[in-house]
Image (cartoon, rainbow, N blue to C red):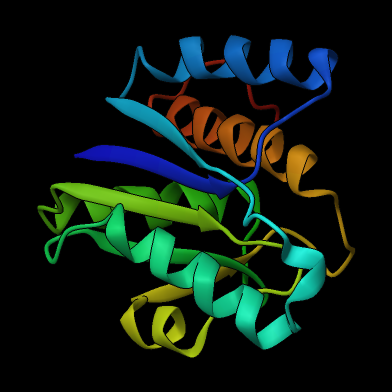
Length: 157
């Protein structure tokens, strides 16, 4: 199974970018992983929230294939402990998925088309985080999940 992270916008914080790269490198020891950044919508200030979600949604849909298993990172999604997230990953691997795709949307969430296309939603917390920080959290939790599955000492129970 391959894991992909799609995210809207770029990371302009060098410290976060360094940490994301560190965890990405670690994660790649367990699973093929890639992160694709979709540029911010141009002139978004002139658009309504709905228009912005539609445009972002169409850009995200261009990046996925029909066989991709799409999981939206959404505040209304299911919450997991690190151990239960590891079990979620194991279940997806056992199911024979080719590509598990996590998506971090723009500031207003996802378009109706993306909600319809997605196979699930995951919430990292009831709190709100910057989209840049969420990237780090997702990559770190993926890494943590795979270390849990291998009974490696990174995660302390």
